[in-house]
Length: 296
Length: 296
Image 1: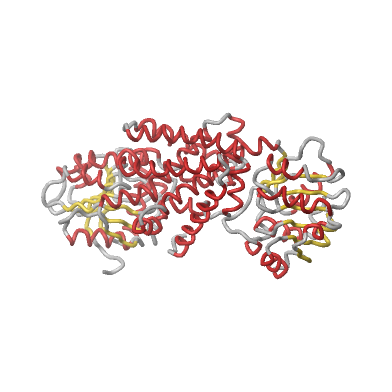
Image 2: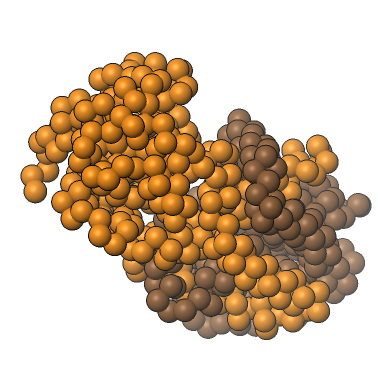
């Protein structure tokens, strides 16, 4: 498949934050669409998207947005993907492809699918990319370059639709991985959701300290804390929805983490240095594995 | 004080890992010592230090190492600073300055001071700098540039000794902060020790997963997990000693963290999105404060 050229006559982005604007800019750069329209209930975001040349047209009307669209990409927070689908579904063109970019897949597939009429192809997607910034002004076409794009198409999803969505992401520089939605939600609970929950927690713990101590935490944050604050600066609404919509997997992995932390707490209290050293030596190996996997 | 020129005729480094070798290389670069000797019980480290030109002489004999030294810098893991002091104390020159680079201060001050004869000046120090790499080959003269160096001199410590140690670190590019040892241990428990404990734990939790899942965690680590693995790759022995030697402060802050994590766990279980969003919005502010404090 050529690296550029029209792939969809018309693409509609529902919600235009960091991910939506970045994909739109990439689609523009690779001439993948002859017309890009944006639908966002936030007028400031619509105006910014037009101002930045992210789209050709922008509207607050869901039906108008998806009219004649060959591809509709839902880029709203995970918790409202279903509401968005319910709002634009009546305006979908026969045979249109609907996709999303949500960090959780089972819940979104459940929430969105029920509103889509027959003849519409839903291709759930999740780009493993992002920054701690949000909004259309945070987007850039290279965000997905050399990053993973996970597709979780339900059994029976139209092959051609999956191929076209894959191509759009490949043009953005992503490497495609297809997996089962339930498996995706467990893997991401470990690699992304729990790390974010932990980071939000520890930064919150520091925020609750007395003002004097808090200022010193900020002053000396380079000693480790700072790495957590970047993660804990991620979009609050998006992450609220991630935890509420991947509850089972997050609670399961969080339970394991808590048990492990209690084990270390006890080892510290009783001065069991061998248990600490043994774990710290194992964790160092994982870093080596990741560096070898060219992830670091 | 001039940016270079002889500050100490002879400096002895006890233990030559990442921190010791970096300070030695900086001392060389700024001509702060006419002779640098290294004492390490690990012959491979001694040979490497000589090979890399980190020191003029190297020995495995503590008494020989500190003979005629004007400054002795203990760069061993925190847990053995006291043993090292006991070993070299008999060989110290009258009026010599002893310092260290440990991440915990109260325990090291207790362990070291008791072995030092009268007329020796102990100036406890802690550079807020490091990498996940260890050993003399990991050192570099710029490690401390634009980083904090915390001094925790007990009341009555010789002013001139404090000034000379400060100057050595200022030449390495550090900004000096003087604080009480107990306060240091609490601030670092929050900014450094707890973040490291959490990172070691979550990476360990992932390591305990089934092999298939573990490989996927490594594969998709860019989604947040990877930031933790770098911290969790830090020196196992050094960190074991940090936790065992700053037990009270670490357990206190860990208790607060655990309560906060349980609060979020409950909010997720009961679908209380407002509690999650409220915290995630607060934590984003802390990141802004840190960026404003020019730490990020």
